Length: 434
Image 1: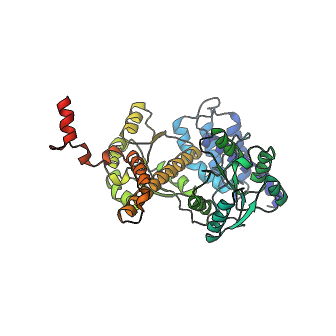
Image 2: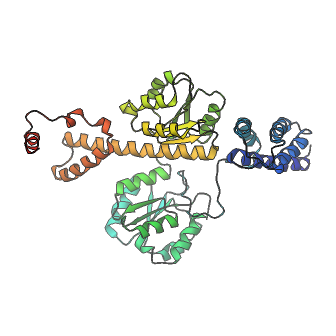
Image 3: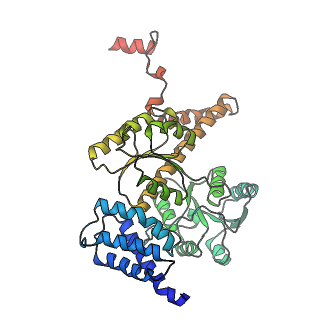
């Protein structure tokens, strides 16, 4: 068949993919005649093309599932059957590169540019602080960046949009009073598929300033003056000079039909995913895998999800690791019990894959941030004990101890903190007053 002869089939294939997306990503959608008709039209054309024939059979089978269900919500059994075939169907036939991308017609917040390698290593720095620029530019150069100072938005306008820097670092007070800032930076955000990162400096107590930064599409907001080493570390991360480590997800689910579909979706979204069908033997595998997030079902035969969550939360090494409950059990009492036992969130099967992936990613990101904060505190106190921290930093250490206490779960507080010693004079005095 000629290329022109294949075009109608390609067009109908894309229409069928869109129908599959509608059915897959919106499990509460009302079935209409157009859903089945779109799939049948594609299957009719696919019968005459060897390349599409097997996918035409899939489309026909889904159309038959929808027969006589027009005007009804998708029931769970039908959705599960669609979920079993739709992802592979869309992967094979969709003209879109990323079927998980969610687009909004009226974006309320400018999207933050993704963390990826940039063609340019130049960072434009909008500041009127000479000392800050000298120190910052030296740190940038030491980490493979090129610092170029601009002292006004007019200077930025003169550079134009033809040169895409890796990042723009700007003092917010030099932007906020200039109407051209919003328009210019918005145009920069849409000037290419990989716009420069925007890092702004301002007063963290000023909500209006922080809101303005969000509306500009800022990647990060730093107090002014900033922690330069931290800011350079962020720049290295978002420009992929520091290699990106994929999130690690461990799934425990004895459902051998749907669980692999969810696991595959996470893998295709760039996460390292391990699936165990046996909760009894999962703990050692979790210890070896070191996940950022654990996902567990509720209804499992050898060990139910509530029991499994309780076992996980007995392990001090996993206190920082969030648990997501993914279950077809709609009993809210069990969901509440799971949350009280230590789960961070509950999701009901069937769940749309984009929502599932976004939820997992958000929880894994929080997990890494918390673990990093605790690790930094641990390293600080270790250095202090080794005499690497000067004595004049002791007030800071005292403040950090308070933060550390807040970060430590009650279960990890040393038992000695609960003990009233026999010769504790404060305790004796308090007892005498009572």
